[in-house]
Length: 133
Image (tube, rainbow, N blue to C red; front, side):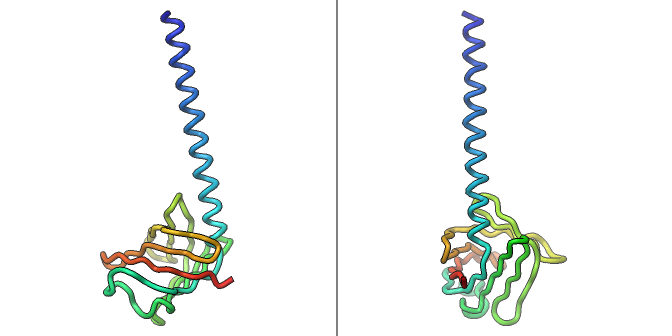
């Protein structure tokens, strides 16, 4: 019975590895789909949350995510940045040229609408953006 038990345990290990691999592959495909949907120019529609964190009208927020993983971002008519981006699961990582990486949550993403949970100065807000194309 000891031999039978060790085969059973070894079989369980392989089953768990197979399940983990399936989950990881699924997460990678979702990530790739998110990146494909993000490639667009996004214009602000509305912002909800901490008013003190929102600079300018929501319509002044513009994000442009390009296929080569570069981006540009501007808001309020007085701030702009450019850099590189990537996603991991439901998070968007943006590294401005010469700056520190920022991480925002992708709350919702479809072909025509993007909702990001932003944090500015410790104040969180959600910004809804509409796809230009």
